[in-house]
Length: 337
Image (cartoon, rainbow, N blue to C red; front, side):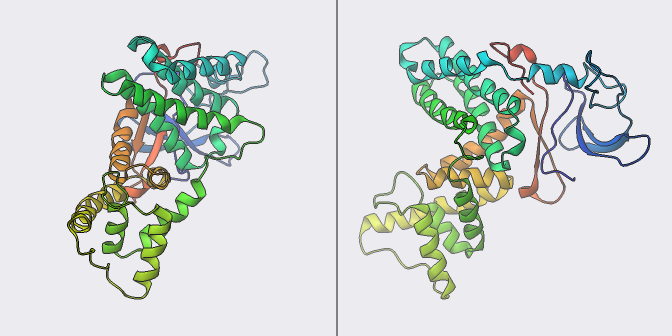
């Protein structure tokens, strides 16, 4: 495919058909190549003519193909126009999440829904979403999954609400005038992921296994651990043995056991999700828990209309295709795609 992700362009439609633009065709009659799919494993590319309809102002043609299901694209664009009330709704939702223990579960679930989905709407309305790197898209999709998990479980609601509020607040800073165009530490995470991939398997396992919360010995920050491993492995050295005490011995065995699982699961994630996971691990999160959450999130976000379409080039090159979610899920007037 010509793009790293394919977004379903249809507005309101059922689960039986999705269509995302690949690229326009350069020919007198116009048209474009569209990816169409019903399931992630059945992607078909077709050359289709343009819709040809225009909005009331006659200046905005529909960007979809002829005989498409649902409303034309200019109706969707109107729904995702800038809305001065949307930011206020996000701020109100974040205030509820910040004091989750003072609200009932229904109010907290509703706030989680608003905070995540309305932030996604705002990023797209401000044309920020299309400029964000793929690993930041993965971070946003993870927030959608986190909001869903808060609705589904009674356990650790306050902790989950606090995490969601913190990460959504970080995402909202992307539309501040002085903000950089991506989440903090993203570039460092991409470099760390590349360095991890270059490590011999036994060193990669040891580094990732050491990034866990329950170590007896203080864990080394991920960037330092990667540099340490790279330096020693470049000299052809094997990982050093554990120190001669039971805590070090236990830590080493647990590092190897959990590191092997973490390394295997990390490699199975799409590349963008790997980078986001490494970013979070570098910030101090438990490595195996972070990777497991990413894998779970990829499944959960299907409920928000985000689907996976395989490129056929390997497990780390899976494409994400955002498809239209049920507008009835939207609160505060947001339209989520």
